[in-house]
Image (tube, rainbow, N blue to C red; front, side):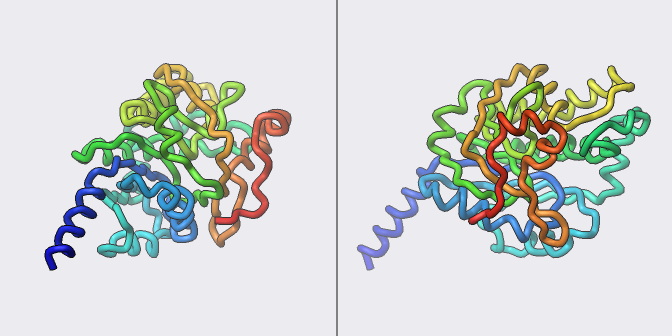
Length: 276
């Protein structure tokens, strides 16, 4: 009995010594149940020396009820620390208050055409999700920003990321030609706080340039420039976005459609089969 007690103490001490990683997730939970296991398989399990804390902010539109119920079920999600669901109408009301000129912006081009509201909601949700992390007293050595509809198809080496994530460096899967990938980011806590402040930069840009259309990756690049963040490319990252109905789409698909020549030389090969 004494030996068992000592083993329990030793195991507890070892767990307490693990460095903590925050996982900040924002976006629609619509296909979350199809994707969440991939994060555990590709990020949590390959990094047993770290403890992971999860923070979720989502705009709830009614299509995500099953995912919301699953997340709220006690003990269903290991490491869940904060969950906030904002009704879609309240989110739109917040946008109208923050960005009165948003509705007057040009429609835009390519895959971003007519998506000004979606782009604004994305930046706002990133900010809201990271605020949940910052309100928690837990100390983290690294922060991962991801989306609930992203299925991870490659492993993330957290130890290697820690060695690279210094100062204002933010690891992202793509950063070329005044475009910065907005689905995934890895950074030290202070750099991630600066990254998540993209909504403030976005609001300023919309107010100053009401005649300019929006393109999400370009708006993220403008924020990196404003906040003096340094993007560092995660060249081994692979992932797919899972759409309604379960259809999977390579996470670079929209960028490839809008920037074909750039995609041919600066983006990874298209993910055709995602082996979680």
